[in-house]
Image (cartoon, rainbow, N blue to C red; front, side):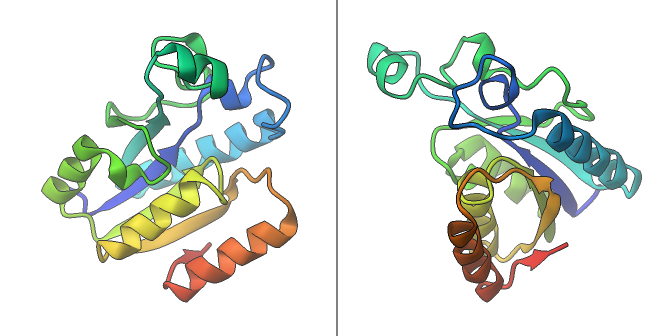
Length: 171
């Protein structure tokens, strides 16, 4: 039983496939290749692999105002190019993965001491999850080349400074 986990965050169709909204300007092919390489590397090291998805309730207001990651849609599913190395899958409604009761229960049961994070987005859900992990006393790493960024460099630098100030390590 490992006390270390790689957490793959929000690698879903709505953010990566050809039909995504223009605001999700990630290089899907490159990011997916890098995330898959991280999955293979950490699995080989004996780390648990965990997948997290942002899922909004399938109600008309979410369809109109949010328009992505809606429960029950193809867009909310994990991206088809993503390697699935475990059945550890959790859904969240808020940016911090620790907002998911099921994820928190799993983390507490496994007693993780270290977490490496990758996926989408450094200034969104990956950054929020890093803060959540630190708050729980988990040593936290950001896998720089396996995290997507769509925000201006200034905002990314501010997030990095905040996370480094909390003790998060960039690798």
